Length: 370
Ligand SMILES: NC(=O)c1ccc[n+]([C@@H]2O[C@H](COP(=O)([O-])OP(=O)(O)OC[C@H]3O[C@@H](n4cnc5c(N)ncnc54)[C@H](OP(=O)(O)O)[C@@H]3O)[C@@H](O)[C@H]2O)c1
Image (cartoon, rainbow, N blue to C red; front, side, top):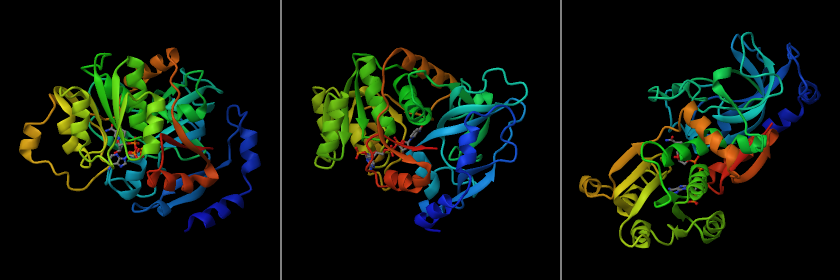
C-alpha cells in the first residue's frame, strides 16, 4: 500500500480524541482502547511498513505501560527494513529501537516508576552490564516488537528516567546513537584530552561522538560529504573537517593533520566504504571502534593492508549496556549537550521520516513524535 493511502487511512480513524483523554491516565483507564502502530510486514522496502490498529496492552507483573511521545530512527532500523541486519527477524514486528515517553500505568510489583514519570528505553533491555549477552535478539525490532507505537508495555528494568532538562524528542535520540558513541569513547581505554578522534559523516553516532569528544577535551577531525555539512561540523566544534567526496584519500590527510603520527581513536561507521582509509589514518596505538556498515560493497583491503595498518586495537561496539546508558545519563545531567536533531515528523508522516533517513540527507537525528 502506498504511503499516501496509508496516511488517508490514518486520518479516517476516529481515535484521536480517545488518546487525548488517555494522556492524564491513571491505572486501568486504557481498558478496551485502541492504539495505532506500524509493523514491518516483511523485509525489503520502506513501503512494507503498514499501519495497524490494535488494543492498548495491559502491563503484566513488573511491567509499565509507556505512552510513547517520541522515537528516533537509526540507520540500524533502516538496515532491518532492508534485511541487512538480523536477517532472522520474524515478519510483522513493530520496528524502531529508541523511544521516550511517559508512564501511564504500572503493573503489579513495579517499584522503580510511577504514573507520570518521563522515561526512555534502554537499547538492549537484557544487557545490564558486564559481558555482552551474545545476541541481538534482545534488541527492539529484531526478535521482539519495537517502539513505533503509541503505547508499549515494557519491563521496568528496560527503562531509565530522562534527564530533567531533556525533552521527549531529545531523549529519544539517546538510547542507540549516543550510548554507542559513549561506549566507543570510553571503554577499556578512555579517550583523553590529549587524543585526536576521527569521526566519519554526520549521522547520529558520529555527531554524538564529536560532541562527547569535545566535552572530554579531545581534538576532533571529522569527515563528511559536502562543504555545507563541513561548515555545520565546524560550528559544532570539529577542529578539522575533510570532505571525503572531493578528497578520497582522506585517511592520508587525517594522518598529515596529526603531524604524521596518526589519530588515536576512530569512530568507524562506514565499514567497507571507509575501512581502507581508516587503516591509513590511525596511529600505531590507535583504537578503531568497529561500529557501522554504511558501505557494504567490496572494501578493498588486502590482508597486508590490515597487517600494516594504523591501529593497535579493533574493538567491536554493540551499542552498550544499561550500565553504559546510566553512566552517559549521569554525564548529561551535569554537562550541557544538546542532541543534534535534523528533523521532527509527526506520526502521521512517519513514512516521510523513513525516506528522509534513507536519502542520507540528514545531519543528526531524525525524530518522529507521537
Ligand atoms: N555497532 C553498534 O553498536 C552500532 C550502533 C549504532 C549504529 N551502528 C551503525 O553505525 C552506522 C551509523 O549509524 P547512524 O544511525 O549514526 O547513521 P545515520 O544517522 O543514518 O548517518 C548516516 C550518515 O553517515 C554518512 N554516510 C553515509 N554513507 C556513508 C559512507 N558510505 N561512508 C561514509 N559516511 C557515510 C552520511 O553523512 P555525510 O554525508 O556527512 O557523510 C550519512 O548522513 C550504521 O551502519 C549503523 O548500523 C552500529
